[in-house]
Image (cartoon, rainbow, N blue to C red; front, top):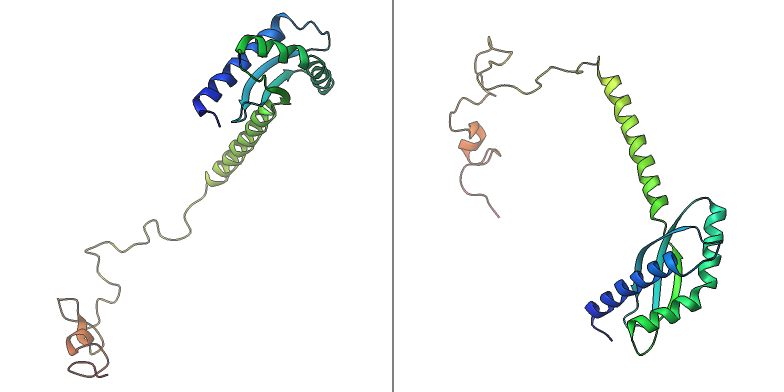
Length: 178
């Protein structure tokens, strides 16, 4: 196993070499507008995966994939020459779906904005179903003010109530029995 920092540095270097080769040395007419987005390498430095995006249609993407596959040997030999590692990693090109994912997320955000606007339009003229403030405010009098405190109501100020003063509300006085 190799240090993760060394593997990351090698992956970055391979990404630079591949991007430079695609820009300057590979002259395949099938090669479209390619951007190398990421490179990952295994911990044993034997296999490198190069992620790329292509600007264009599906046909141009397929042609670019074929061009990269045919140039893989030249690119691998250049990577081996410029990195100086004992074993040159095999290279695999993978189409990065970053652009499609970003477009999908943009579509989802646009749908969410449209739904939010629809809800805002529906709520514009609406009013609450109940009272504006459904909670009883301190200091408000109860609706049954004319009733006198009777046998069933709590008249104590300590909050225990009649049942709490007797010892539990079950009618018994004294400690609970087992």
